[in-house]
Length: 145
Image 1 (cartoon, rainbow, N blue to C red):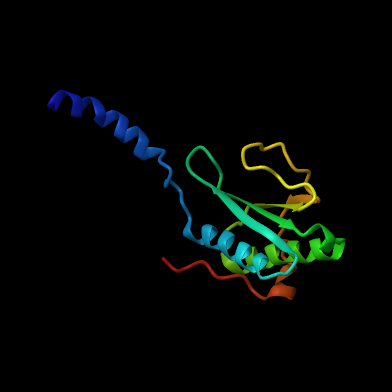
Image 2: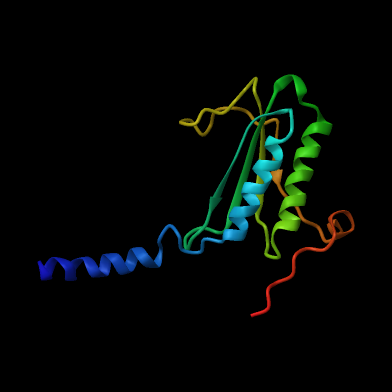
């Protein structure tokens, strides 16, 4: 029994060094939750979700996905959803908020088991230029150590 435990120790050490929680940032995760919550408040929303990837072998990155009711989609509506993502990323953390948004229509939804299904209405990076401070106010400050 002692020998098998010793054999497992290197494996456990390796796994703990690149574990699923390695690099997990609660602030970025909270930003993803906030964007989805705000999107779900809108009547055009059929579904919304986010994916947060992190760890030693992955950069911290949010992928924000929303499916809109097909009869309610317009450029203005999609612009408003992108602006919500920008606002929540801007206000949610002092850190870099690397995020991508993907907007789908209920006419061509993605299927969970097929990543290449569903053609997005629009997708892109959530850009956060410095002049957003004029629109959303100052970003949170870095906590003092």
